Image (cartoon, rainbow, N blue to C red):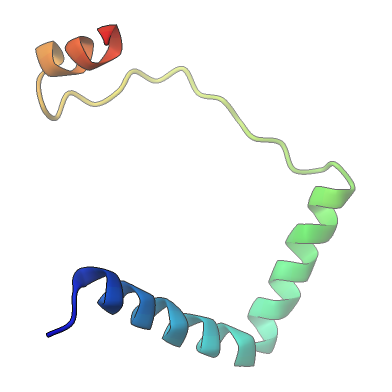
Length: 65
C-alpha cells in the first residue's frame, strides 16, 4: 500500500518526465527565466480580504497567535 506522499512523488516524477520532453514548455520556461533575470517580472500585491471559508472567528484567532 502506497502512502499519499509516495503517490505525490510518483505523480511529480511523471509530470517532470512529460515536461522534459515538451519543447514548448522548455521555451516558455526559458523565456520566463530570462524575463526574471532582466527584472521584468514583478510580483503584484493585492489588498483583497481573505475569503471567509472557516469563519471569521477562526481566522482572527489564528492571526492573534
